[in-house]
Amino acid sequence: MEKNRVCCLYRVSTDKQVDYDTNHEADIPMQRKACHRFADKMGWTIVHEEQEDGVSGHKIRAENRDKIQAIKELARKGKFDILLVFMFDRIGRIADETPFVVEWFVKNGIQVWSTQEGEQRFDNHIDKLLNYIRFWQADGESEKTSIRTRTSLGQMVEEGHYKGGSPALGYMLVKSGRLNKRKHELYDLKVSENDAAIVRLIFDKYTKEGIGMQKIANLLNDGDYPNPTGNRWSYNTIRNVIHNPTYTGYLRSGDSRSPFIPELQIISQEQFDRAQEIASQRAAVMNNRPRVPMNMKGNALLSGNVFCGHCGSRLHLSTACKYYTKKDGTLVKKPRIRYVCYGKTRKATVCDGQSIYMQKKLDSIVESVVKEIFERIKGVPKSAVISSRYKEELTIRKTNLKRHQSEYAKEIEKLNKLRAEVVKSIQGESAFSQTMLAGLVEESEARVQSLKERCDEAQREVESSENLIKDLNVQYDEIISWSSLYDSASIEAKKMIINSMIKRIDVYRNYELNIELNMNIRQFFLGMEETESYPITA
Image (cartoon, rainbow, N blue to C red; front, side, top):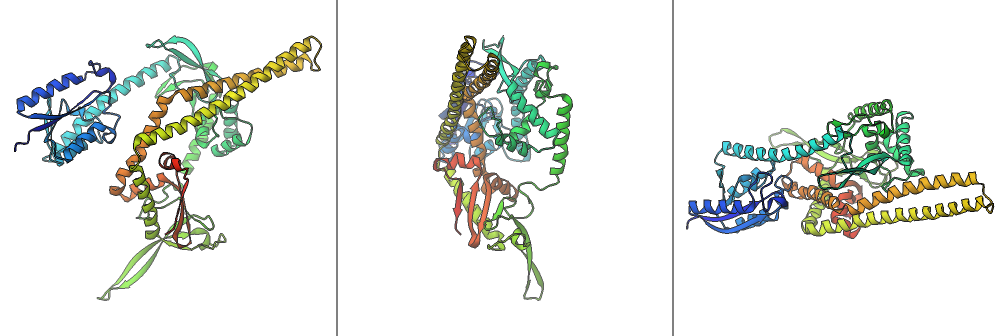
């Protein structure tokens, strides 16, 4: 039987390309005609066709492309012999992935052909190198589109215009009167005085009092300093403020900078430079400290996030050697790696737990939990996970909006009462002076304006569902990739994956564990059950 059964794949990158060519790529009808002509010329029979409309081969990985997965399944079942595309970049343009997708088909007995470039073979190392170079070049073409976008944004900034997006703390958006090509009105930045006061406080605490970023976040949370987003202040929020040059009166986009815009300046250039100097010095100190995972050497999986459940001390690695005598009389040293309770062995704490836990046994228990989580991940469809997280996050945003709207309504009511009292004061019917009431009205009006801005920002967050879906997809794809990589990963990669998944492990006598998972894992795969930790009994 001749192996001439063909499966064709057609793809265009954007919806605009479905009917006509806008980015110098062949549209679907052209690709189909070219493949049919080529198959007729070669004497092949087309038995199956798949079409992807508006799918980016540069951004979307093969594991998330339904058509690629469907073609792979047909290949496994032996339903066709040749995969035919108009050009090889129709399979994808991701340099670190697509060459290996092509190689997968070839290794599974499928010839891969392009109407323009011929057959892709893997007979030797030169074939593999040329295959990689081809997709590296295709990846570069997609990158050019991103460069053009970045260049356009850079030009906007250099002209002194805001490029878009949510404003940084201390600023609000105001209509500019300018329209973009789609006739949508653009926005400019304006200083929001109430929030700008918080920015100045952050820089003063950091540069004048030497207080660290986490402590500043704690001070703001403990004080009467509401975060405009409705969330608690965090280390990352403070860090973003400290490193944002916009506060000195300059807009930025990549390497592009605007001219100095005095009305946007909140912090002096000198104070900003001092903050960067302090941050750099502290980073240099931190670079000399171990990071998580604390130990990338050796075969122990856990380092930095494993603790004694009895006294809370960190468990650290220790190696003890045991000697054996072989039959020929040779003395052999065999190392035994252990996790040791630092508090108990150093007598720094009162601990009634074990001093030592064997590395292989503890690692094995934790690894079994990780694999169990991966099995649960594989058992939940992506659409269900994203939908669940989307609804949860949207509920949080709507609750935040409702809270701001309630505060805004109360302040409006208060302002109206104060204004009515002013009228009474003018008529001589109020116990309060006009001067006192004027001050109260001014304060209330400022509060109303601030709350209105927070309502508007919360409303934009509720309405930006497209960006939310995009962010959730990125987070999901990152987590799901760990599941695919784990079994074949190096010990170093496994350490990184485990430390990315697990926030803390508390170990008790007889290897009873309590494993606290990181936020993303809980939210995406365990959130439906509101599970925050795994109690494990060996």
